[in-house]
Image (cartoon, rainbow, N blue to C red; front, side):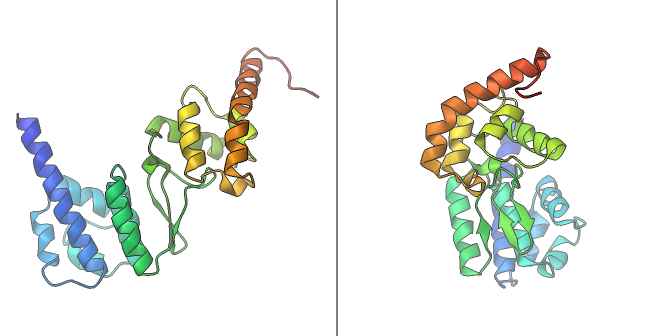
Length: 212
């Protein structure tokens, strides 16, 4: 029961914090500054860490920061809530802050700031888990960007990034910049996964690739 009480306190505190940040970032500083005094310290520290701030006095520092930094932090915090994401995306649109769609070659798990815009986080795509995003990001850092769906399926651990996960990221537009239409991607998915699984088995068994 103590954990339940703490969880409820954290939930309410996070809501207060989100509203305070939103108020500050649209210029409604009056009344919002004091809200930080009532935020659970773990939640405040989490947001401040994302913004590169010291936890206290958080409000005076946040007022002076770029608005898009507030919003990519807020969007990451509410990443599991489709309704909240939609709400804050509308606020960003009204303020002229661009939110770029998820991209298999640049998105991380959380929303990120990119040259004045915000990049949609893969973790906010329904059906995509943290382990899957870690596998995608890790392979991308190790061997560079993915050329297309087939290259992706040959390189990424398909036990972590399964068919449902791939369908979700395709539907969200994360492969759009590879030059393939989404319908073509869906049509090719089964074959790409089978080819990728075979390539990975051959690699594990020491079988040289075709043409080697």
